Amino acid sequence: MSSRSLFLAVLLREFKISLTQKTDIATIFFFFLIVASLFPFAVGPDTGSLRTVGPGVVWVAALLSSLLALHRMFEGDFIDGSLEQFLLSGEPLVLIVVSKIFAHWLFTTLPIVILSPFVGMQFGISSEASWIMALTLLIGTPVLSLIGSVGAALTLGVRSGAALTALLILPLYIPVLIFGVGGTVAALQGVETTGHFSILLAFLCLSLALCPLATSAALKIALE
Amino acid sequence: MRFWKYSTPQNFYPAAKKIAAVFFVLALCFGIPGLYIGFFVAPTDHQQGEAYRIIFIHVPAAWMSMFIYVVMAFWAAVGLILNTRLSSMLAQALAPTGALMTFLALWTGAFWGRPTWGTWWVWDARLTSELVLLFLYVGFIALRASIEDPRRADKASAILAIVGVVNVPIIYFSVKWWNTLHQGASVSLTKAPSMASDMLLGMLLMALSFWMYSIAVSMLRVRKIIRDRERNSGWLNN
Image 1 (cartoon, rainbow over the protein chains, first blue to last red):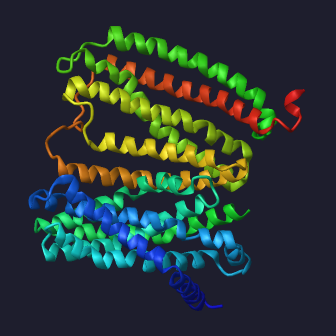
Image 2 (cartoon, chains in turn cyan, green; image 1 turned 90 degrees about the horizontal axis):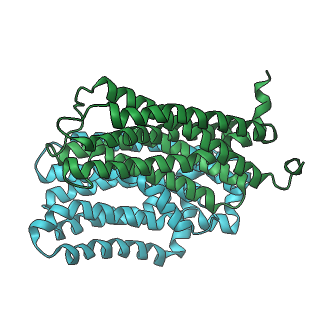
């Protein structure tokens, strides 16, 4: 099987599975909305303070939703044995992993990215800065999914897996969070944002090159 | 001498006891003069008074916390690549000491910060990175603890340690950048004041002492790990 058709076949499979799990995906989407909506109650409805915390809140909410969705990435396949079949198929596991991570991002996180500018505007962030925030999320959230895939694979079939994944992965999310929020804040202050985007793209390249390798190694360990 | 002989737990077990004893003695040899210089010889700092003396614990602990993480990741990687059990056991034995050093660095840092900066905690780049390092250690220990099969735990935690080691510099520089952006002039630790040679000597002795202590205590811990894992293999009871 050529690399491209393998990639697309896994993607199509993930899409079909996602269609049967629509409520799961909707839950993650509404989780994002609810977490973001909690903050005005916590810091008060004053527009000034909401605008200050806005970019951080939207980013943290997106980050937590991405984390919440991580267990979906491999757990189903691990339990029903498909993961073992992937490994036995002789096709490169790394490519299957990349496809699965991409599918996971596409179906659980992309809807959040699309919604994020509107949530940003709720926090009093100007529409222009809100779009830039959506752009930082568009580049940053795939990095989160890539890093997260390592944690999801390492904790397969492990006691209290979800909490453990959070513990392993959240510290590694910090750089992405810093530059994602930094880019948005720079846009709010009318400062040049190119540097933030360059660094976010660098993170994306680096994690795209390294994380799938670590994830496939971890999956092989889990299946031993 | 056949060095590789010691790469099996069975041969390393008795050797670890001797190594531990030697390095405990060394830790005392460096630690006692280090503390004496730190508390009695080194001059009082004209800005910070006596409070600065906590750096004789704080700085060695901070150095060791970072160093041990790298060593731990190294042994974990060796265990993963060469499939040697003892390397993974060493990594496992180093983790709690590393976490302890990180915690000590944070705790003594808070004690130093209260009289000097007037606050227990600031979101300074170094403090924040050290906190993240503590999380990385805790993650490593927690992942190990939650996997039943020790060999699978070895390999999974090795991957985590390698991922961590790649990330540590990225995290450090991100945090540093974030910190300079947000609180320009609140506290600056970067320009180190010229240090009296007694202070430097005391600190180096203490650092050596911490280093020797870490080796000694990891050797004792590796012995316990070997006892746990090899309890059914027979040679232990002879």
